[in-house]
Image (cartoon, rainbow, N blue to C red; front, side, top):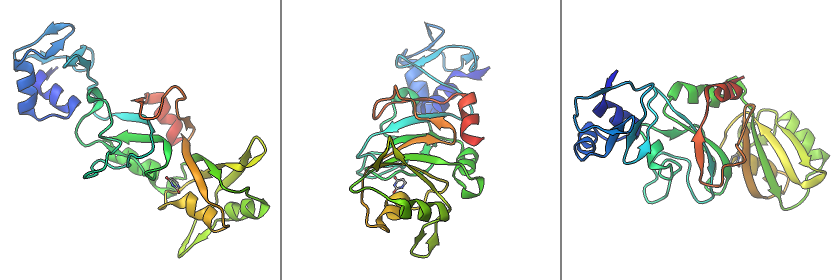
Length: 234
Ligand code: URA
């Protein structure tokens, strides 16, 4: 059991004082009944707790899959720019959320948003070899030369990329499935640029073995289940 003001604060990312204000205004309910007593204790694991009409998720850490739209940056704070954390629905917002890994502003697809720093580190560290799969649309077809260079590891300025996989989508060599295990700055765009090819569109479709849920429209998100987390790490 946990005090209701703490639950509201942790689960919706507001201060304790703001959580108490919401409770006093009658905007918080537990199992359908409005709770106005800030000292009320609820069972954070089993009770249905709502704030401003939205069901809250109270757990130590959360893991969210977002289909990132274009024009939004992969950061938790972006000054004048909109971030993936800004566009989360209010019911999913809480303290310390950040995207585990960066997609460029014009890249779309799977972004994992979490408040679990250790987990993020594990899936991002190149040492752990977690594959990230992308679909790239190109201004011209790639050839065998590109395939063998990607497989050996493309050299970018001073960085040697780890071996990557590349294949054509349905025999169309202007559409590539690319699998990389690092997240270097503009990595895929720079790898193609080395061969005079421009990436026109880039979408991340998979992290580890977990695919982006196809029901998610750009900008939409949902929680990742514990089983699905296993698919990312294994
Ligand atoms: N590679 C890129 O070039 N951009 C991304 O957003 C991700 C991988």
